Length: 154
Image 1 (cartoon, rainbow, N blue to C red):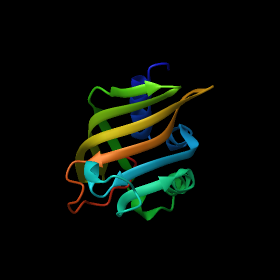
Image 2 (cartoon, rainbow, N blue to C red):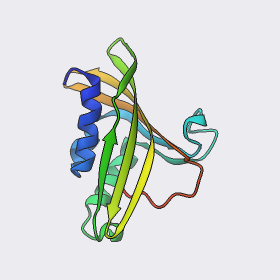
Image 3 (cartoon, rainbow, N blue to C red):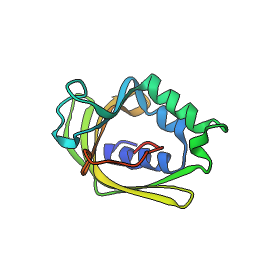
């Protein structure tokens, strides 16, 4: 997969197919997943609380929890659907790419369904195996409002 835009679509498909181990393998060892509490207005994860700010170890723990048959929050299991607008490469240089992808995200569990919208920002690095995620930032529209519990990865 040479085009980083194809990589972003592939990543969303892995999440929707609940292929969490394969999704986790897309992250570099120093990779981070961040959902700022203030959305696009939040400059960094250190000066204000975040909905999520997870390094690879925390991502791995969350994947293990989602896969655990005794995880109460997954009875019934949650499912997601990412509807992506065209990803736009904002910058590409030195084996790295920064992309911006507007999205709609639907998470369903039992009779409940949650709809979120926002923008995903990926910082990708080229490795011998292809693209990998160094950082993924999710800027939710209206992130500061009360949100339901989100079980999966956006």
